[in-house]
Image 1 (cartoon, rainbow, N blue to C red):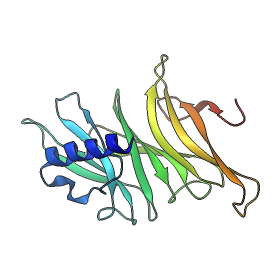
Image 2: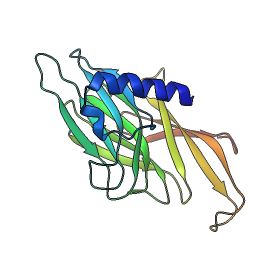
Image 3: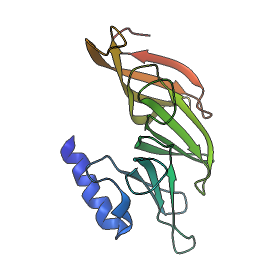
Image 4: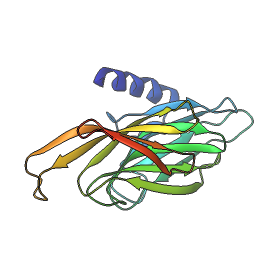
Amino acid sequence: MKFIYYSIFLLVSFHLQGQSDHLVKGWPIKSIQTTENGEMTLGSSETKGKGPLSFLLISEGTSATKGWQRTYGGISYDRASDIVMVEDGYLLLGSTSSYGNGNYDALLIKIDQKGKEIWRKTYGDFFNEYAEHFVKAEDDNYIFKMRKQYCDDNNMQDCTYGDWYIKVDKDGNRIREKNSIFGM
């Protein structure tokens, strides 16, 4: 898996021709095609944004549209992991310690075609939840996978991690969830 991320990083870095100077090397980066034949690249930045680590979205643009860069997140650590195009914009997925209920929580951000934030939602409990990636469900909703930490006490002793899946609608509302430790 590290080889895949590293290969994607090298390809994206070459393609961005200097725009990737602000992307954190070694962190997952994902590029998708836009409806206008442009490209969106999502990564994490230590040099742009409000906090020490922020989502960084770079729109490549086309001959007809101008490219742009936007950061998302708060004053702490926000790490991007996936992007998906939806009917009226994009959903950005990652993990945050800027918002939410505990240490790290999953962060889902809806933006419009120009990168303006429409809404932001977090998913998680007191311990750590790290969002990984999306899949589109057959009913046009989205399922994202996370790694969830389970601990016996608040001292974070005797902790284990398991997979956690959350199904959300187009507005980020939780429809269903399942985890690999306790089931549904």
